[in-house]
Length: 424
Ligand code: LLP
Image 1: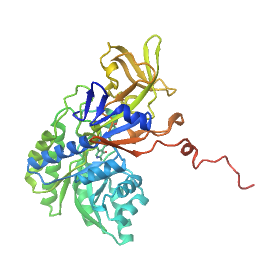
Image 2: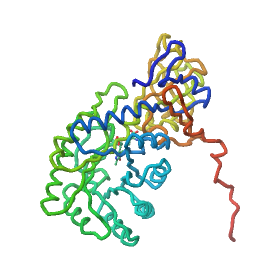
Image 3: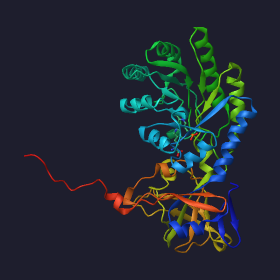
Image 4: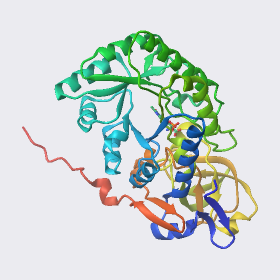
């Protein structure tokens, strides 16, 4: 995390900005993203793909981070986006991303969403079933459009990641079975209103167990490309999905060079452009959640109670995920450590960020940072316990900008009403 460092006087900094300064301006909790880190990571990934000699395009999976400023920055770095809903499609357009750089994935796209995608003429729709192919064909024909569609194939591999985020096994709801894929691809290519452009897969997320699962999945896609060509059908590209893991604690995180290598050996000989849909690898390490200590409480265990909670950063509650926790002040940084449970104020035992974490004394008001929270952080937030959504801040060098305001309390009640009954 080269964008984070401890300054002897100003405490923990993101690039050239002390986190204490950000807290003084926007309060806590707050999400803080590093523009430099986002750029560096994007360039490392695209650089690795280029160095492997691949004709590759990258579509950022914006479910990981859908802040408009982040999306605009990534787009300036040459990325498109992978969207999974009408809301994401609209946010992407609001961030200035042209339809020609948008891919639409997802297992349950509604007619309304598909109509919008067709009206906007986005780059590609990834279809996940025979039923959906029929739906896209009918809608495109009615609208007088041609949909560029890739077929999402479920390669039945085990990415050996958390059960809640593995997607490439036969039992998962995603894609079509590899054994049915050729027949469906042929049907798709023959469907009015559809141009069959390729095949797609995504085997899971936070993949850290090496490249074996990727290689197996991509080798199956390569076989399928040969089969498609053997029956004389067109294919223009292969979408390799996302999933590249990062180091939250001490997991051996794969480098983009390894992924580029896995793509090269399996798909490199086909003469087709490839696409990638990474989310976490680009944005995760680039962001943190800044919080204050509300109070320290000594019971059967030592509890540090933060003003951030599971409604802000859900990952520890939902996946038992481990996030690094750093104190911000230079004094706390050098104080003796003892084990503490770091929890939020929400009324659930699951509102626990860490158990038995070695931390210094953290008196009320002390600032702390939850690391690697730039992906699946703010996007998974809710207002549970009527806690407004936290603001988002983008740091670039010595400057920072509030790129999303803290939600107001008025907004929590907005659109609600006490019924004024109509009818008998
Ligand atoms: N493409 C598709 C079709 C996906 O479903 C996903 C993520 C991605 C790309 C991006 O995967 P990534 O490169 O970020 O691993 N909330 C969970 C992660 C859920 C991932 C869902 N799909 C978490 O916080 O760990």
